[in-house]
Image (cartoon, rainbow, N blue to C red; front, top):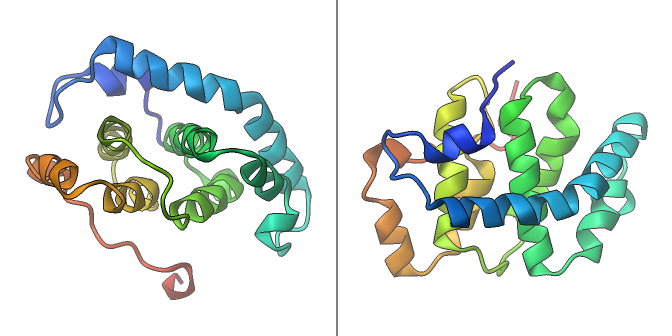
Length: 167
């Protein structure tokens, strides 16, 4: 199991310049707003039918009830949770991340992508899906913001295998 400390991962020196504390705190404030509903939805889906179509799951209903900013916060919280507690028990959370990553036009901000990339790199290779959401979010950034992300070679995001290619 891999563990990444939230603020420590956001502020430690390394390949990524630390985010200003106010920016990181605003992310945590937004994520705390969706966390109770996310925990409840993930727990209900863990106990439910894993073959159910996503819109019919508790996570799907939660995602469908949020605006773009709320969905970004949900994605960031779920990404953070999966990076901290990555094991077989995160399959519901990883499904939620894949569903959010597939949604175009969520208005991702460069600082959000940097934060997720920093957590992903800190998690290391044990978390195989760690780049799913930051990669998708980075693809939605403006060209100028994407170029700025490219200044850190350590942030090269490897291609992820599709779920049907696993095994």
